[in-house]
Image (cartoon, rainbow, N blue to C red; front, side):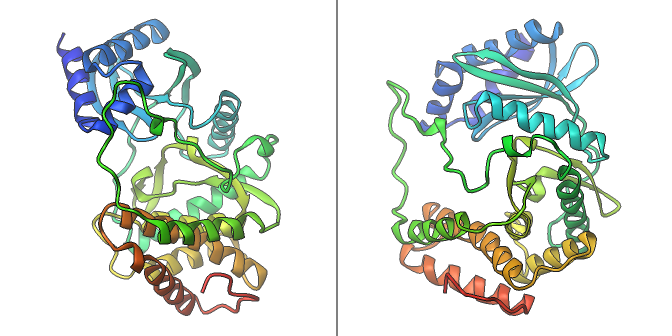
Length: 346
């Protein structure tokens, strides 16, 4: 009973808004937290033949993710997928995760592949061990360590035979959790973000036209998904975020994702440039000319998404979003100091 109560409290804490109730309805087919907790408990008993003894954490974003200790001594990471990836894509990213793990990337071991959870959803289970510390994204050593690890992921993934099965980073994404479940109250409206969204759409259209060899990389390369030991990456989480794209675009995008910390990076543009240069040193190639323009597009994608989020969270006015975007891009370009064949955004 204590475990079920802990699960129920975790579900409540992770979804204490009207939109959170909608998440519960989409994931579990119910808004009742006790029912949701029971579904998780029964899934573990049915598929892993063991019981939950402790809830380490439970979060809801585009999926439900839980860290659990089990009665057989294992600690696992359970993820319930709402449909952000279809079943074939889930299998592809987990195959790529295993492929990279075999090549020394510190990715979690898959314990249970995508399995029917209930309510038309699938769940996966990974071994969970948080190896290392979550270091600050503005420390030079962690910037260099993260960039070097991304270079290893990209290089290791070049030999993955099913690269074309990995979703593209510019593919139109859907968020099933935003579908309104019957009987759920509408959440408070977000501030309008028309100008911020227009900038983002322009960036996306430009990015879709960029051509080049397709590689795979982690497309949510935020510092929260990494752990460090002595400045080197000791763990990489959330491989469901693997995406395919042109290498410099993926690197530019990751350079902003990594430093986007709630605690604040003192000079974000300079930190992003440090990430890019550290990646180039590890990969032993520089992004110049057309590659510099592609890198710029990756940076622009993350910055435009940040600007829209800033407006929607009431952190900035929508009319200021284009200027915030332009100022950051100018600062990044000036700090990087590369020649661009064209300047599509500002």
